Image (cartoon, rainbow, N blue to C red; front, side, top):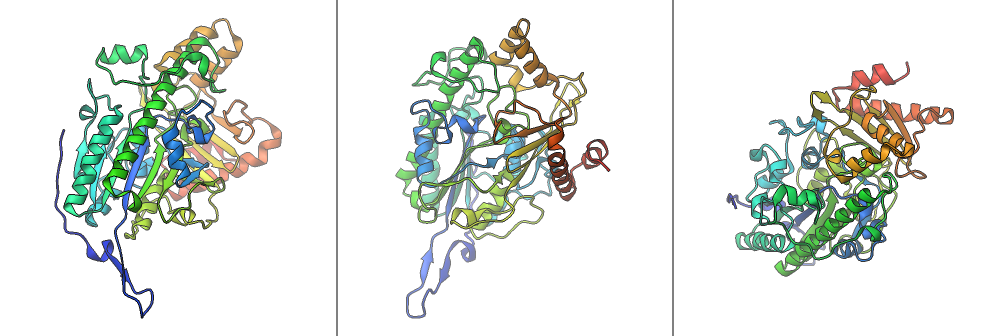
Length: 481
């Protein structure tokens, strides 16, 4: 375990705000607000109970968290893969605009949330996934626990008891030093290898993290974007076993916060970095790729049990929202905008659109994708799709993809679905209200021609605004003159 401690004087003008509510009354003194960000790894938005999962008590702790604050049903990350997703969240910029479109360190001239908090005297801490926020010097971690410190075995990072232990230690450190804190607690669940799987044993041997509830194949429902065949069903059951352990980690973190005495003065946010690591989810631009469960708890500020199904928020909005909530200066050149007014019950105009992207290179192939979702419709551009190049990635490494290949030999429907995943098509359009799993591509349907033009115009405008490097290619190949 490596711990770095940096002593910074508090900025009194920011952290202790005084005002005279009434000339005849004493001044009120407001404490600085703490932040606890909890992230899941590869959690589909609808795997959570309060987001529609019907498995009994699959996520009781996350559901309880949602009941204590606000739950957004139109929340997204801007890229569906771990490191760029987290770096986008912590810079308020799209990956193509922060210098890190894939597994790269962000650019030196890009300001991070941690730099701003550090300047304001906050104690910055992170549990797990520190390797996915680079370069380290840009994030100013005063306290960090690496993957190797989070569990037995080879840095697995999936032990709820250890998250409780280290979070408690960090909260005590904050109290001892008299500093407000920002803690990013990153669970490694339900990232593959899934709990109890052969892949897990093959990778780590017998020194594995424990799980206390095992889901059986006959208990689960296979997502409609995958074929319901035995090996897929088996992997979905293993995935849900990992989801349950994630929920235990969330419960452990919230218990540590409660015991610390900081709970009433801490903003808690929970979200996932991207969707499940199966075909048509992670590392793509589908609804199951980028849509995330996003829950915010802030005692005294957010009414309990609220649900926002009106506004769209996304990862690039996290940093400006936190800065706004903590009364810290705005940062120039962020692509996102604060949604703090939504937390206090107000409305924001024009929050009905979200832009997502993907960049990654395998074997010399650049799998660039862009997507715009406006209310119910999603338009996706697969720049790499040419009928020859094949999709590669984490989702092709597990039991489900292998099972689909085997089943495709005799089942024409599975064969067609597999070909769509592997080769894709240059353009896709979905009505996510009626077809949330993205099963029917409407791109060639004449009745949707005007909708396609509208979405292309929105995407082109955003690509131009944020200086997307493939703006010209999109304009020349896909936009009618």
